[in-house]
Amino acid sequence: MMAYLRSLVTREAIGQFFRLGLIGGLNTIVYFVLLNVFFSVVGLSDFWSVTWAFVLATGLSYVLNRRWTFQIKKGRGSLKETLVFYAVNLAAWAATVGLVELAERIFGASTALQINLASLLATGIILIPKFASYRDLVFKKALGEERKAEKV
Image (cartoon, rainbow, N blue to C red; front, top):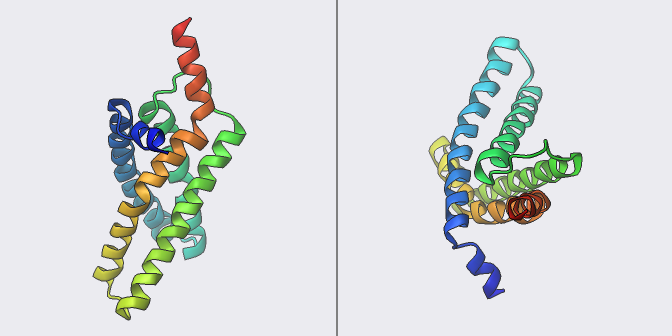
């Protein structure tokens, strides 16, 4: 367990974590732009606006994290890799919703500011598990193949 925890604080992992955070910030902006375009311009319902914005922003996140955060240059990624990436993001979304709901139960009815603060706190809480999931569940095989190719 300690060796695993140490693997999260290497120079490489810290760089990956930083890049993940930048991509997360960019994707948040992309998500809200898409959400508002789908809802206000295209006229989709709130459900479909949220759904399409989530799907497209998560797809962008996948490509950027694969290519820039984890610097996997070869291949396009497998269907399994992509599905696991989406599953990790759905779990992160569910954890965020759960933490926001927990905050509301503890502190009572929420204002918009309180919901945003709870969401921000939840994002901070799930960031390290999300990073570890991307590295160890989603991109592990591709990272291993890249390193093998570099040694040859």
